[in-house]
Length: 334
Ligand code: COA
Image 1 (cartoon, helix red, strand yellow):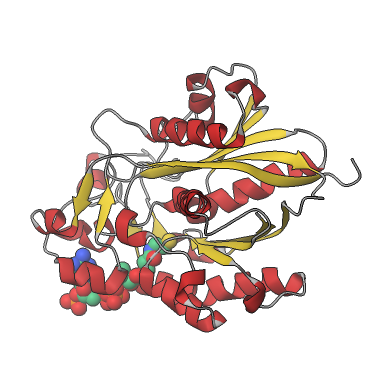
Image 2: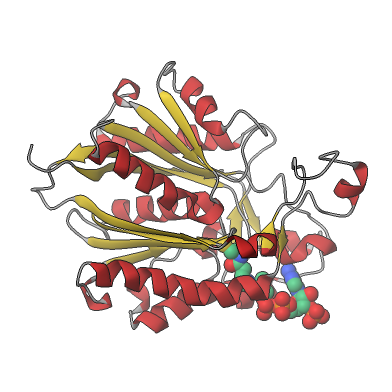
């Protein structure tokens, strides 16, 4: 093998069966289907039942990715799990997934980069493989938002946005001669914006880390400065996509598909417009799932692979922006 490169060998996704429409949210908080659709493009999202955890969603997506890649569980040498809604404060979901897949002994890494978690995870998998540390890595992005949302009037600005689901990819070594390989990643963060999109409690930054008052005042639910997030997202998404393309001498016309983190349809539309791309090249499924944070890119990728929209050799740019703020892109030949 001349050059060690990395490719995505298989994709998989899983969303819970339970569909939650905007009308259902309207029944528990002061909102409307019209407001949600106009401002976000979301019509419905999926919520788990009372038993299914974030790791369970991840396991289901992982098994589908393994099938598509033609791997058995035993082929997995390392696990990376990206989520902001882990089953426990610690340990992380990586070891829980490892146990549920029956793979004791292999390493498991947890990524906490929220909406960009999948891309930070993909960049780590790519680096581990290129340097020869591993040949086959399972990367999962999964979220169970439904248990953490504030389902009343005070939570309406965030509760209507998020949904549950998981996506996974099997990442393996290749020499790239068949034209299927990851090209490069660009990772960014600006922690000055940490307070603009966060869950403040529980956290060891306060003493005690969780009180009755924190629960009552809503700081254990997501807080978002929607306008600030929007303003930064419409700037950073195009910036990081163009950074990826220009670093390889490409222009937007060369791209077969841009798969953005599914934050908001208005953000996705603004990105398409800024890049001069037709809407069909900028993948969107937010209408059906809402924002699934670390899961949104691998769910969308899995869907377009299965639909045949993205084929082997397609030039694909994955891009994300979110809490931190963090933003990132991964450019690849699928
Ligand atoms: N239903 C009805 N009204 C709502 C509402 C809801 N679910 N949530 C907020 N509102 C109200 C607000 O209270 C405000 O009322 P007011 O004018 O009486 O104060 C009004 O709608 C407008 O709120 P505003 O925040 O100005 O709306 P907006 O046009 O900025 O849209 C978002 C709100 C959240 C849709 C928008 O800011 C956004 O998309 N931000 C980015 C979100 C995102 O992508 N987050 C994830 C990042 S990864």
